[in-house]
Length: 226
Image (cartoon, rainbow, N blue to C red):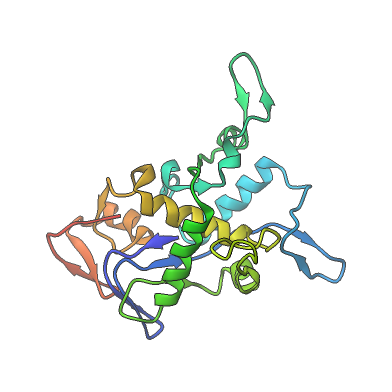
């Protein structure tokens, strides 16, 4: 995901500054013999090194250089920091330490109200297509398109989502939006010239005076934050 720092036009659609884009995903779930996917059931055969390799391939698809996205902006469920055991003296084993062992560092999301996160996400989805910042989802995000329509409100708590909903992909989006909204993980401490993270790596190599206006590179002395 990325937050646009300048308005852009993609495929004829206007995306206001401050909009969020779900660019791609790496989703693993169980598969039925007929090939259909069980979106709400994980693949228990998946190991930490195998998952990290899948993530690295995701980065490669978009030509991300190594460590292009810092750990504080690689946000996952807070469960990744939950202790699973001990690998040695004062060496707790967590999913995050396992991922780190194979070259991928992540940050667990902060504990916060699910309802607040869902309201933020719903507001951005509602605003998509207007002159206000919205949430846009690319066709690469297969699981998000397949499951989001089934993420309905809970009858007993309309502000929250139904507990049995297939919410894994929606949760991933919520973690990022909530962290950015709270100003956590130093989301706005770096300055880059590109309109969004996909452009940062190349800008650092080339010309720091290049910025993006309406999705086009132009020369300007301004600098933008994310």
